[in-house]
Length: 454
Ligand SMILES: Cc1cc2nc3c(=O)[nH]c(=O)nc-3n(C[C@H](O)[C@H](O)[C@H](O)COP(=O)(O)OP(=O)(O)OC[C@H]3O[C@@H](n4cnc5c(N)ncnc54)[C@H](O)[C@@H]3O)c2cc1C
Image (tube, rainbow, N blue to C red; front, side):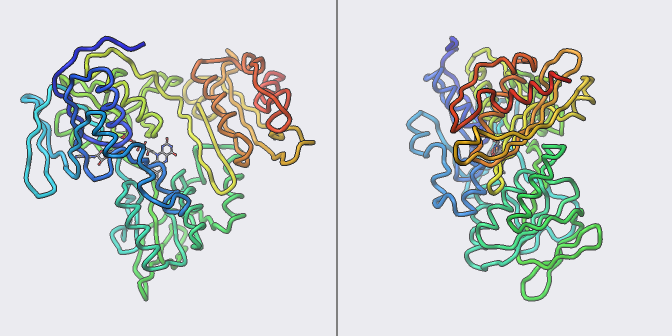
């Protein structure tokens, strides 16, 4: 339903990525009379940061193809872009943002409504050597350019990735494709967004593709002879290497909001309500810089994802021009491709569900993705957690070959978690079937039936 909104006024947005541009587009769509300007810290508005690993790997050849929309398309939508400008402070009393222009001058932008969509920053773990040449992070297009330039100019033969989250494992894949010998060094389990036997499957896929995993916290990066580096781990291990990528997570970029007087909440992110309001009059915030409403936990958490940033941006853009929409919340659905394997999850892990006061019970199952008599059948590993008391699905994880429609299946379960379906209702769903793609009972329904049997 298209809401009725007030028209006119000035909407200023700081941040031109998923959240900021989603907001700008929605505001212009609903209120063509509103003057919408976006201050963007770099020259790459509306770029898909999620695509960086695939550009580094060479699977995407031209960085411009990562743009969801071109600058021309955005301008044709009536969005004013202030590129390469850094917002320095917000004066909420006088409704003005001060920004630093590329020529080093400051410029004032008055606003009627302001949206902070400043995203996140790469976490910098407490260790020596992060600023040495040959050490990289991956968050912005500039990081991607620096990494690609190093790969082309210095032709490194080996890399250590510090961190084993989804960016770490995606980059292990990407750098292996570029011909590097890759080691992951991490203090926590590989891809700890999944649990049980799932983690081991991801680890197995890494090993199969020659990626070595060292279970140790990296404590220092040292420079070695002939431009080489050395990564030292907590177990005393020391790995000589040509290139280091630090991928230990992201932190909300809240400096501007904090200076403006906004309160910080979960994970140090900007506190917002579900209308994406910060509590400062006429100041909204969305995306990786804010906390996120979790539908199962019924509280705010820090869960920075592109999917969420787009939705929060849309809500903020709508409300900033007088709409009245609430963010529906997240259930933490995510998927990652590691070489030939997809690993996906939605909802809560068993221990998270127990901590939240549910009475979780979990089943794990292996199944063929489609009828075995049809060529190409591959195995799927499924894990399903539901509440003993109500039979409601709390979470699920799926791992399998990328041809096994892992994300389609996981998304059915994500829909179920989102709408609080019971395991019995999932077992009864009318899902599609033809031998090349599934079974009369889809593997997720077989897993549901297994759970129901107790
Ligand atoms: C390598 C990588 C892979 C990812 N893969 C996935 C994935 O597969 N799926 C998924 O859901 N999510 C993924 N993500 C997460 C996703 O990219 C983020 O959730 C998303 O980009 C957040 O969008 P955002 O608009 O909130 O912030 P950001 O993308 O962080 O953008 C922030 C914007 O604010 C601007 N900015 C910041 N401070 C200022 C300032 N002071 N002045 C002016 N401008 C400023 C920046 O220039 C930028 O335009 C990935 C992230 C990375 C790094």
